[in-house]
Amino acid sequence: MLTIGAHLSCAKGFYEMGQEMLAMNANTCQFFTRNPRGGQAKELNLNDIEAFLNLMKENAVEKILAHASYTINPCSDKEETRIFALETMADDLNRLTALNGQYYNFHPGCHVGQGIETGLMQIVSLINHLLSTQTNTTVLLETMSGKGSEIGSTFDEIAAIINQSNDTEKLGVCMDTCHIYSAGYDIVHRLDDVLEEFDQKIGLKRLKMIHLNDSLTPFNSHKDRHAKIGAGSIGTEAIIRLINHPLLKDLPFILETPNVFEGYKAEIALLRANYG
Ligand code: FE
Ligand code: FE
Ligand code: ZN
Image (cartoon, rainbow, N blue to C red; front, side):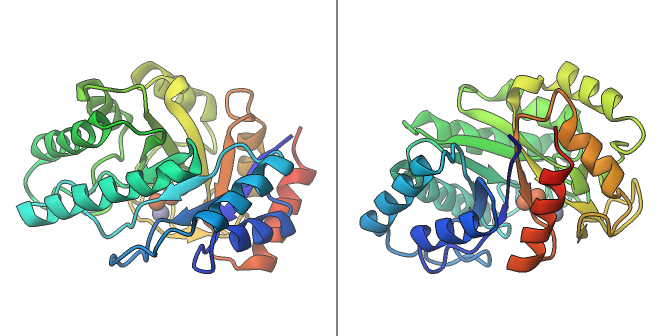
């Protein structure tokens, strides 16, 4: 069965998010750990989490994805910004323990002129701090489009981060289709080659989740503009090939397309109808 869901709001609690997930015929979902613009995370409601975990179990939902706020920057040129990223992510991981072993995705960050090597080193240092304390959550690096000084838009950079990290058992990758197409990986015409390169450089066993998005901008444009499925430069056909690829078909897919409930529900129906 296709494991697919969408980015949802957790503002009204986990149980309500779970109900919304099921109502759109999804069997996974993603949520922001806190307001994406930063700020305090809400007080954890353990009853709500327990009800949500039961809902997951009853409906055979295996994995969900927490997404760190995209405003934190682990490789900023300002030390206080790097410390803020570390403290925020450590707090997120601490809270996510209550969810019993899910995934936590983050953007590696922008080196803002410090250079890629310095940026990579700072990201490795962040990961080493985060994973040195006990966590049941697997931390995922998201592949980026390479806009501005963004790190993580090449498989080499992602591999460099993983290879230099101390404890990689709880470290993986979330591949964003919009981002990698924008970064110059041609998943429309050369999906096999792209996956082979991923496997050689990073290892497909690290690939835990896929962000399934079409791209508003052309191939190799180094922009980050998500489009609805079929409304961008990747197109429905290539996306259907991708979810059916033998190396990808069993992974969880998360839609981050510009949609609310009905739009997500329609995309999930379309993809389910064209799977397997
Ligand atoms: Fe993201
Ligand atoms: Fe993404
Ligand atoms: Zn994006």
